[in-house]
Length: 273
Image (cartoon, rainbow, N blue to C red):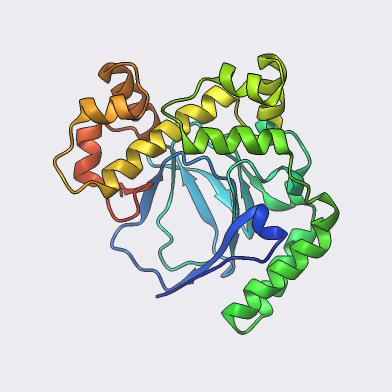
């Protein structure tokens, strides 16, 4: 298997977390459940094989994705291929930082996977062709970096208010209220909610819930002791254990104890078929 990660230089690095290229991945399973993590991605399949989205319950194919697709921020888990026998190039945006590349309200793409050229213009197909043609992996990364910088350089402006709100929620999802954030940035709650939805894809409260869930996932993955769900719920900002379990099941489809029996090293991916 080949798996490479590349971090673009400034100013792209303010908006894009990394590029990922992989090929030759052959897990024993074929289908994953991907959990909400607050990220937005552009995904390219370089081998021309269609990838499918499956019904969460029946696992029947409900959508075919070809060549390039844009995956919006998610409130719900999604059932996708495991990546078996694929050749993939992925652009991972920092949380809350995809807006300059789309320039449309991101809440219109929430929980959707959309053909890339419908969101990013047909030029994204030109980028895919350049990445396919580059013989070396480093050259694939450099082609993507050069293309994105040239096309979007004039748009790479950080919104300081949204940036502050997003970072605060990521850093302290167990301690914040939306009222506190609105007061700090000098907006009314109503105005902050609207801006946040357009720039991030979900309202602040929805993003806060996703980040609380991700804190739990991180705590599960890094714990070296027996897990106490009551303590984890309290430390993650849930007001009671029942609320914690309900949110966990809504985001993952499993209770916390069920999740423990299914987790792998990739905490946001669960093999289900």
